[in-house]
Amino acid sequence: MPEFWEVTQQVLGEVITSPALTEKLLSKPPFRFVHDIVMSLAQTYGFAGGLVEGAERDAKSFVDKEQKIQFLEKIILMVEQVLGSKLAVKASKITSGSEMEKTNDSLQALARAARTPKEGWTKAEEQVLTMTGSQTTKVSTSSSAVDKEAKEMGTKDEPQDPSSPTTPSSRKEKKEKKEKEEKEEKKEAEE
Image (cartoon, rainbow, N blue to C red; front, side, top):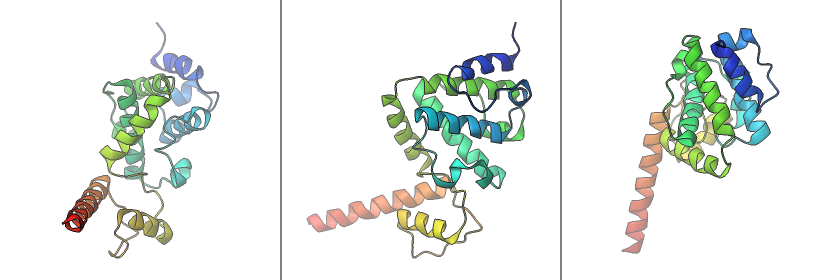
């Protein structure tokens, strides 16, 4: 019976040529390796390309564990939406390097999802963006990135603390608040 990582090596090897799928990396996949696999699929097939934008394309831009977890949660949700089944892995377990077999199972699921018809990806990306309440995970805390995100959320005038990134739940709340205000304005305009 093959080792758990050998199955991943075979399945992923059918869809990507880089990064190198070595025993060392697959037996305990580090975040950078998982990120490189996601980026390879995004560049080669376009899979999850709508979820990964800007600074997220560079693994070096992830400076803390929370940013890595948010990125991985989006990818896990995307795979779940495309395949229609829940993955057993948690993003926090991937970043901590524990549950290597479940991480490998999720990499195999990622490869299967990337082979599905592309039409389903767009719908899945939209669902993930709705579920996470954001368009991208914020990994850059430069003032221009903060200003851009604030403008997109309609919160440009609110004070922003660039050292404290916005969580997906607070972005979702702001988005819902903005949509509610727009509906009320539209309703008032019709009256």
